[in-house]
Image 1 (cartoon, rainbow, N blue to C red):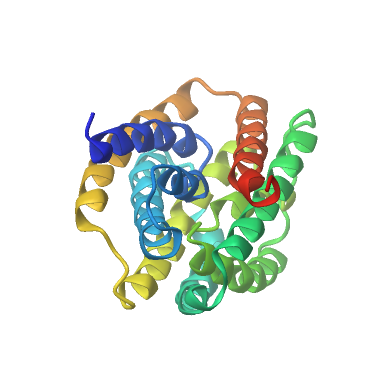
Image 2 (image 1 turned 90 degrees about the vertical axis):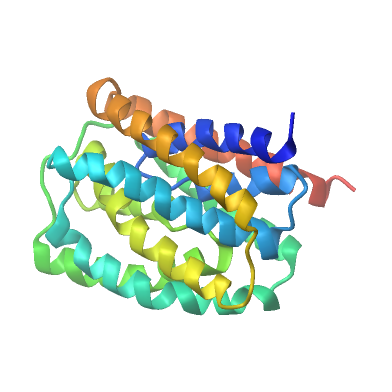
Length: 252
């Protein structure tokens, strides 16, 4: 099977899974691209950011129609991550590939562990006051946006646990994260494209795959998935991919 087609099929399945989690999926798209032999800095990261944004956009259109997104509460995150993501993208060429992979894996393990630990807890019942949320998310958006651009991840895997900690129910946190990730992903992607990093054939095939996969995933999440299932799936997937991603670095 043609390598590009096979890559597209794998990415479509990943988009289905990650749209259920309120994520763009770049944290797994990027390892997948490197496993298929694509260069991490010049192909995997920019392509992952583009697909991350498209997956999130496709899922968020569904969540917006279902009134699951807190648009007002997402504005501080959108503004600050939109500013910081291109800065992170400009720093990427100056960081070694192995260092990027280790940072990537650490972020995934921490986020996955947080989700697994919270999966058995009851859903939040009280939302943090808006002013306090706005300040905290605004500041956090700068750091998450920078990491999103640097690592090509969009930031959803950090947005979701943070929103849950502020009192959002899991499904609303996932839906709101999808909305925010659109902006941080496309902003970071623009920063990489400005440096001439892209593979249009790969992007085109994978774009079709993520649009189909994310629409199906968003529908399944809203209608079928329970909050604790989402958290557990999220946690196990992140930790597993993190170990697989950095294993070659430490195994020789």
